[in-house]
Image 1 (cartoon, one colour):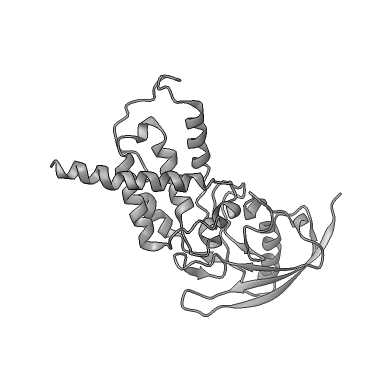
Image 2 (image 1 turned 90 degrees about the vertical axis):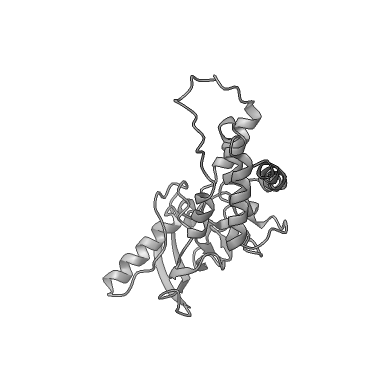
Length: 257
């Protein structure tokens, strides 16, 4: 049965990257507990606009837990209190009426704040640009099952490919590390036959680009806990293993030229 809640929001407002920023309080009365968190923000923004005030800026797109743009820190937790749930699929029933909810942007040096709750996550794009693709010619689409891939390997590659690049792992990490994101993007290509030709060049390039922007992983495990898709820490171990191999294999191939 639908219930009606009264919520107080403590929202981070920041006019731009150079602004100091501050928290502002807003009351959101009579919001349905069936509303999503972003729908609740929409209701608040409509009211602010009608009052001649500036709407709160936040990222969103698909609102189906797929695109990863709904990046909010809610009461100190990336994407809020629900495990394996993106902000867009977090519903107000997870909160009690008369709660005060603190809403902030991702807090990571690699994700500078653009305005209010929106951050610049282009550092992720730069990691993908150096190796998150396959350039080796693979011909046309083969017939089904023509390339034998063990089911555990295919399943693991699909698990890695679930990463939506939201940045929750970075925001939750005490070191601001992006190892979970990078390892997932590496693994879903490195595990498949089509990705083998560039496996070690890809790994070396993406890890070293990651190190230019993000902190170091010290195995706190906060990244996996915050990930809305439950990406496993195992992929970080696989990335580290392939990176060590890449430093040998890439050097060995260069010495022959």
